[in-house]
Length: 388
Image (tube, rainbow, N blue to C red; front, side, top):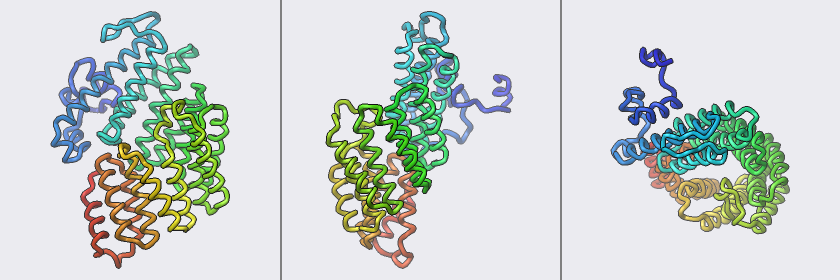
């Protein structure tokens, strides 16, 4: 394999890039592991101008690689083994902590660097975790590693979703569901299945999404997390409305509202910490929009935006996009284009291709007769300038 790398007949995969960077304590660029244009193609002009952003990325890769090597040594060793950092790490819980730290750091970079910038590193970490899982056999470590593999695979699924690769996202969520089942964590499995349903919505497969949501509800009922059940009901509300079933949509909405109000937020799992009442209200607004009740949709989506915590900037672009779409549907072009333009601005900063694609789709629904309208023209300019 090394000979093929040296001859240039095979590129070094992201997995081995990370380990080689750690082994030689050098960046991938310094080792000559990047194609000439690869590094520049991965960054926008603004990011290339920021040496601190590039340095932060390289520093993270080094840290993640070091932790990966320590975790690998801990699992493969027959007894306690001293890692490169000089600490002993042979307990299953320590292995999980090492792996979980990498996933957490990768997740923290999402939104700062954008999903496309960290997918390679996430995939490399996934390869390592899966390799450790295979080596674990039927030991006590297997369940622990299965959950960590499910966690990083779920993150990759989300990153793929956010760059608009919905088929790939669905495949990764399927894999994450299998791993979560093996790890015997029904709460996490319910979250993965709910995420699958969201991808199916984007793939215009709402019937299958409802089937997946029912399976997720069945799994969630085995846990004490009413927050997860509320989230699933909110997804079902919008999905039923898209299928024209208002009765089921509002039944699901009432369930989502009641469950979230009755929930104990301090017992909410980490992967559901993002969910709050603004999402439930937004689901109702989007249900009204799908059912053609534009005024009701505007009222609820405005309320959802007011309820949305302002520090969750990445999510805010999605709320703005929904509100802009409702204004366009109500023939209020100026307000709609203004909200859509704000959504694009945030999506450009967080590098969410999914939101940009959605705004482009909504823009395409506006009649060409309004091309010279001031706000429409402004939205077109913002879309042309976006770098995602």
